[in-house]
Image 1 (cartoon, rainbow, N blue to C red):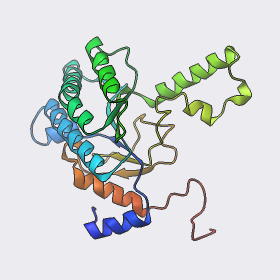
Image 2 (cartoon, rainbow, N blue to C red):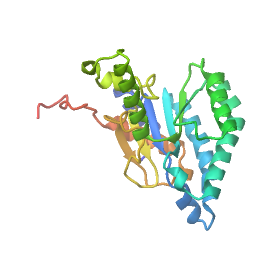
Image 3 (cartoon, rainbow, N blue to C red):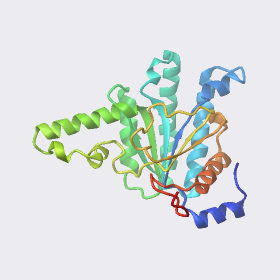
Image 4 (cartoon, rainbow, N blue to C red):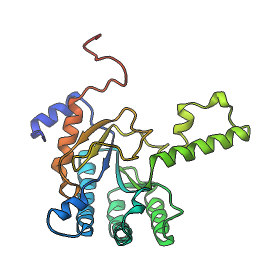
Length: 252
């Protein structure tokens, strides 16, 4: 549950906000079905929730917000649903890019691009190029993204570097893997939120989520708003992150 303003300020004073929040946006189809509407209706409402989340994250003062827009496994969905999702991405980039840029938001896109339509690839490049020098919040859009594929591609790059003599096998470590991931310049997520009540990662940021805190919300994504984001962050700030160590107040 969200805290009132005083409680939230007290928490913020004693513990830091998360630098990086990542969201698995789940439940569009179920939200639409509960209203007797087709799944595409839920996806359209989900875009509005993205806008609310970005605005709220910016106002809260997050450094990075990552949203999981389309997974590499989503290609198995019906063609008409995939077409709708691609159309919504086009519309979001065309309509929202100028506003994001005006608010000093830097846009980054992670995920495999070669299988996307040329105009979508061009829009992604345009979004990144236009906003690359912005110094405000970074909005990361994970689109056609799969964490296992990302790790495999990093491993292949390491193998090529070892074969080329640029790296020894003894020099392969966690840092070498991390710097070959698409998120290399970003901090790892401190908090991962998933909506719709499901409690799994679904091939999302598997490497980067090693020490993330998780908050699972029972609401469907189209109902996500500033109150939901603030409540999840409040829950995060009540926790003590130990990164494998002991509690600061106990040696147990």
